[in-house]
Picture 1 (cartoon, rainbow, N blue to C red):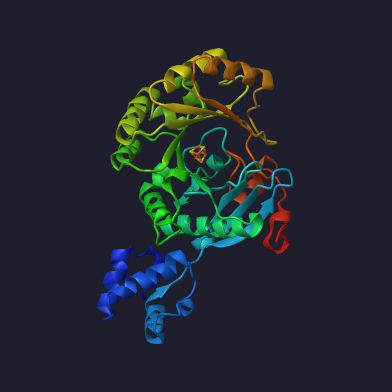
Picture 2: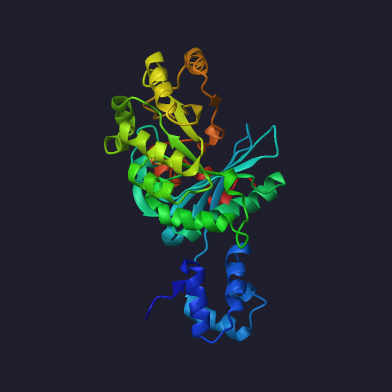
Length: 368
Ligand code: SF4
């Protein structure tokens, strides 16, 4: 017997064609699409403006495989909430809600792959390897759930999205773009693309492809060093995407989109935090309008790196500011619950590596 198809894997066009093939009028496609994406229902019986006959037919032909919240944990220090979501096949990914204390902003950090194949040395996700890409609907659905949770816990909808969770988005570009299309569409969440930032390690070939689509969302590049040997040492992907090629691709991206590029730079003691490193960073980022985010490294019990001492960070910032570069220093939120940059990892893997995580089990969620 054929396995039924997941209805959320159909495009609008495919859904329209299916409905017309069973004799339904054209406007049904819009109704059905709104139930699937805007209202994000998880069963055909909830589609109350469709006839019983049509709902029964849909049940015969399709299934739902909804993304579910598996566990969650809130930081007592900054209120950041980390969620683990269960996907089809019992795969787990993480997403994070980051409220701002000083503004109405709530940012969601979302994932695009189960694990990641790129193995950056400072990143917990990289230790998992790649299990699989997320489908577009899985990216959309965990963001949709985060939006609901934001209203529940912080009394407001999401204001910003960063595609910076588990995985390298440019290695799952088609699904990421499809999900972002629906997230920004009026038939989905209607969010402004100006409030979305996609973060990549800088996959050169995919950057050209993305540039040609002239996206309206923002681009961040996890740079972490502007010296090839240093970057290759901490990010193996740099060997096949070296900095001279990355500069050319980013110049092209800027030419096509007119967008300023944000560079993320983890401050690692003795690795990339000398004045020589700052000079290389200044020279690299001068190639396009840019902004630099220096990020405090989150040490874990098994970290092979240490965070740069405050005085070293100050010298680094002074050097860049004296060259008129725009620099901010960010303390990653959620570091006490392993929700910060580079700390997201499927909890069963983290358990093996780091902690006893009994407190994360669903029957013992520590917030409600
Ligand atoms: S930093 Fe990003 S690209 Fe690198 S291993 Fe982690 S998830 Fe993958």
